[in-house]
Image (tube, rainbow, N blue to C red; front, side, top):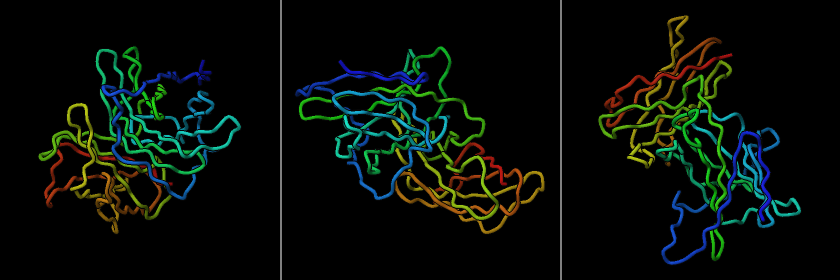
Length: 277
């Protein structure tokens, strides 16, 4: 019997699927895990849940409380003696269970960070809704020779007070989710600004790589913007990077335009507030 430890906010389920010719196999990423040299400091993060099974300890971590925006989650695997395990065949997917219906959301392939830690970048396009299904589920697939074990974590995704993922209709790709990766607060000066861009196609989400994201800073109280901003350009995998310049402390906004072939294609205003200290 598997021993399961639960955080008060988290439900975790375990299932096993044995391989056969007609078995349904998870297909969340289609990309093999990558190894990188940097490490993640889980000591500064929140552990959402942990469980033990098949001699392994599995835990799920987040840098902060989860809200409906771009988030990074971290899986950690250890053996029975507390040693990190970094050579597992592991994959995942996210799903919003609303009771009568369910849908996915944008997510990137797992990245092996070393020391038994795997990073999952996801976009929660909405918050959990009270009394409507289980909410967001994080399903981890551990693949063995003859079977696949599935760990299911229920995630406490709350409504954000600062918009960071905004949906918009477009003239070219229908409904698009534009995720700004700026934190809520920053010091004055120049900063890299990053975006993740995804297209919604029924229940599936695909990365968009053929846009330019124009950025404009504005300080409403002073009625001025700033110079030396640089539009965000595609870096691959649906990610975009540019520069924004905040010249003084106070409340600012970043106004965004989606450009394709030099033409603005978004049907809605895309405005991201930020506090500059």
